[in-house]
Amino acid sequence: MPNMSLKKNEMPVQNPDERNKNFEEVALGYTEEQAIDEAKRCLNCKNKPCMTGCPVQIDIPSFIKQVADGNFEEAYKIITNSSSLPAICGRVCPQETQCESKCVRGIKGEPVAIGRLERFVADRHNAMPETPVEKPVSNGHKVAVIGSGPAGLACAGDLARKGYDVTIFEALHIAGGVLSYGIPEFRLPKSIVQKEINGLKDMGVKIETNTIVGKTVSIDELMKEYGFESVFIGSGAGLPRFMNIKGENLNGVYSANEFLTRINLMKAYRTDSSTPVQAGKRAVIVGGGNVAMDSARCAKRMGADVYIVYRRTENELPARAEEIEHAKEEGIIFKFLSNPVEIKSDGKGWVKSVVCQQMKLSEPDASGRAKPVPIPDAFFEIETDSVIISIGTSPNPLIKSTTDGLETQKWGGIIADENGLTSKEGVYAGGDAVTGAATVILAMGAGKTAAAAMDEYIQK
Image (cartoon, rainbow, N blue to C red; front, top):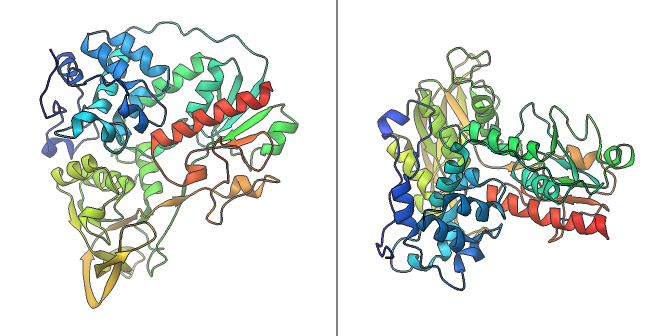
C-alpha cells in the first residue's frame, strides 16, 4: 500500500545542545523501516519529473521503488549507474531546489525525501563487507584530471569505467577537494569521502597529491611531455574574496577557506593540534551562504558565541534551509540587514570589534535579490575575538597564467562550452573553475558531461 502521508519521515539528528559541542555527524540517517516507509510515498510517476531536477540524471523513481521493496543493493546499483558519489550527494546536495523541487508529492505536502533515501542506500551498501571491484579493461588511452573535488572525481570515474588510464593531479596532500577541506566533519564525515575515493582507486585511477598544476607541472607539459591525450580542469574556486575594509589584515581575521581548511584538514579544533586555530570567546561570520553556516557552526563547536552578519534579510539567505535551521538550533545569532564597514584593533595587532552599518532593502540587483543600501549614520559595534569572511571565492588564476591559449572570464572563470570544451584543443573544464562557487552535484554533472565529450574527442 502506498504511503499517502503529506509529511516526510523525520531525519533523526543529534540533540542541538550536545552536537554544538562535538564534530560528530549531526544527521543520523534513516533506519530500514523509515527508509521503506518514506519510499512508499513515491508515486512512481511515468514521466519522472524528479529526474529533470537531477544534474546527473539518476533514475530516481526506479531506485526508490527498489527501496520500497527492500531491495537495497539493487537500488544502489541504479544510483551508481549515474552517480559515483552517492553517500556524499545524499548528505550535501540541495535536493530541495533540485530533484525534490520537481516531486509531485510536493504540490500538496512535502516531497519525497529523495536525498535522505540516497544517503540510506549508500550507507547501507558501504556498511556491507567489501566486494572486489572489477577493474575495467584498458582501452589504451591516457587522460589527466586536475583537481580531486566533485567535478574531477566524477570525470575520472566515468572515464575509468570506459577503460581510460586516468591520473588525477591534486594540489593538497589529501584528495577530495572541497569535500575534504571545505565541508565540516559534522556534515560530511571524511571517512565517507575517503571510501568513495578508494573506490575510484580500485578501478585503476591514480592520484598524484602535492602537485600544483601551473607550478609543479603545466598543462602543456602534461600533454606534450607526459602523453596525456586530453585534460580536464576541475580545480574549483578556492581563491577567497575579501571586503577591502579597514582592519582586514589584523590577527584573528580569516577567510572562510582558511578557517575551514585548517579545521577539516589539520584538525585545528583539537586541543593537541600542532596547527591550532582560535575562534576565541566570540566570533563574527560575514556572509549568508552554506560556507558561512559551516564556519559559524565550527566556531560554535570551538566554544565561541557566534554571530552571523548578513546585509540582507533572512528571506534572501542563500544557504540551505536545513543548514540555517541547524545553525539556529545550535545557538548561533543572526544579525540581518547589517554590513561590516571596519574591523577595529585592540592596539596589539588583534581584532577587538566589528563596526557594522545598518542596511535597508531597495530594488532587486543583477542577482534578482533585493539590493541592500546603507542607512546613513546607523552603526553598531560587536566586540569579537575573530572575524571569518565568507563572501565568496574565485578560481585560482595560476592555471590560466601558465597555459597558452586558455581563455577565461574577467572574474577568472575558465570559458568552456556546454560540453566543457575550452579554447584549447583537448582541454576541458567544469565545476566551480568555470561557473564560480556552486553545488557538489552541479560540479559532478559538469564532470560527467566533460568525460563524455573527452571520450568522443579521443575516439573520433
